Image (tube, rainbow, N blue to C red; front, side, top):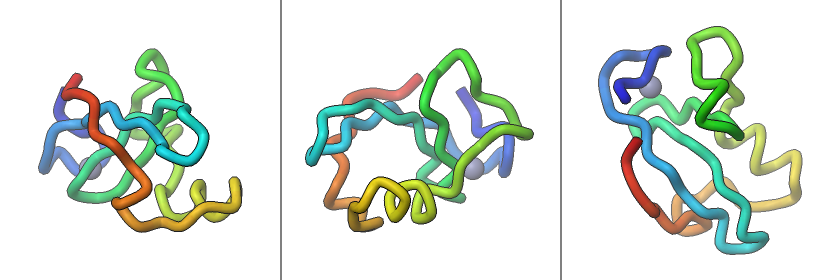
Length: 69
Ligand SMILES: [Zn+2]
């Protein structure tokens, strides 16, 4: 799926290594969604802001990319 926010890259599914949860993220603009069913241009989180909110680093090292959707 092309990122609906920036339309520059494909959204990937990634696992947060620290807690095992899955997120969906655009590598280009860092738009983040918590569910693949909810991906739209109007309801994304900013990756850095989200990771900070759960007490984690915003480095991509925190993520294990598990697929492209
Ligand atoms: Zn994007």
